[in-house]
Amino acid sequence: TMTAIFAVLFSVIVYQFFKIAVLDNAEYQERANDYHFGPITISAHRGSIYDANGTPLARSASVYKVFLDPTAYRTDLKSLQKEIDEYNAVKNNPDYKENEYDLSLPVTAESYRIETVGFLADKLGIKIDTVEKAMAANNQYSILQSQVEKPIADEILEYFGKYNFSSIHVEEDTKRYYPQNEVAASVIGFTNADGDGAYGLEAYYNDYLSGVDGKTISAKDSNGKEMPYRYAKTYAPKNGNDLHLTINTKLQYYLEKHLNEMITEFNVQNRACAILMNAKTGAIYGMASCEGYDLNNPYEIYDTQVADEIAKLTGDESKEAISVARETQWKNKAISEIYEPGSVFKVITSAAAIEEKLINLETGDNFTCNGAQEVAGATHPIKCHKTSGHGSQDFFIAITNSCNPAFIQIGQRLGIEKVCYYFGAVGLTVKTGIDLPGEAKSFYIDK
Image (cartoon, rainbow, N blue to C red; front, side):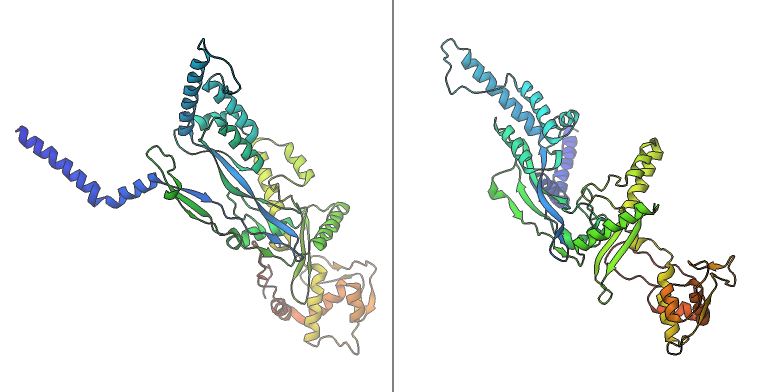
């Protein structure tokens, strides 16, 4: 009976070995590789954005990610305590004589750990609890801080190197910054915490600007430590492409400056926008949505009046108001919001009427303005900006005066079908296709 039981147990064990070694070999091989080969990402530098004259609008700089290997750190502390104990044993010997080669060691490894916690919290701008949790974690990779400037990263490595600690590491990373701050903010956009474009050109050309991250794959021993360099293979990152715009920074600056002045002077409530374009080529020299925001600090509410109002709120109301305010300031009003064209549309009405030969430019047509014009179906007369009226005027005087009644009369000559036809003929029923995200489509009533 016992022989039969042992035979069954032996068969089960053999089957399990066979299952692991043959049937599930691929799965366990992958697990082994995941454990023994550790990839470290090497961030690609995001491409820069320049204006038409080569002035940088967005660039990437090298920064560093500081992380701790908690398991190795605890091993380093044990080694340090052993070194302290050995040194104290020698120092306490009656025959010991102090000399210039004496080691400068902390009182205990624990006192050094406490000192280290305060040092890291101070240098990295993080809470002491965050450092404590990272040191106590049961893993080999605890991120302490990202986007650390090089001098700080070097100081941390030097601090840990004093006692040959190998448990602190830094990885090169990139940080996006915007030299012109708020200039052309709604056009350029910004990147999120993962380094991907969130708005504007940064989002539209994200794949073009991003590049491809590289990586170093190195073998690790049973304790998780990296093995000598001959077991490592590095795949270099491919940096992103640069973007050159038609925007002119000087023109953009003055466009925003004067637009903001008008906002203040006329107490504009829902921001303002303007586009400066080469009408022959379609090149955008300036595009502004004001008030804007600081690209280097996009989550701060830039409009001080709005920020003051939000400061009075609490709880969910405050969170909702902040979310709306941010979304508003990030939006490119010049392309994302529709508006009534007003007198700008008189150019299209004029072109359509001339094309249909409904206006005789040689002999002249007279259009009468009494200060207002009755329109069928309207609840009230459409007024002219000159309430006393322009009287009788030909086409050239009417367009110079931007006279509403005169252009209502021209529109009535065209009729609804022709007005709708030319509305579409000049491209107002479709998007322009500008290389920016969030372009809105026109709204109109098609008869």
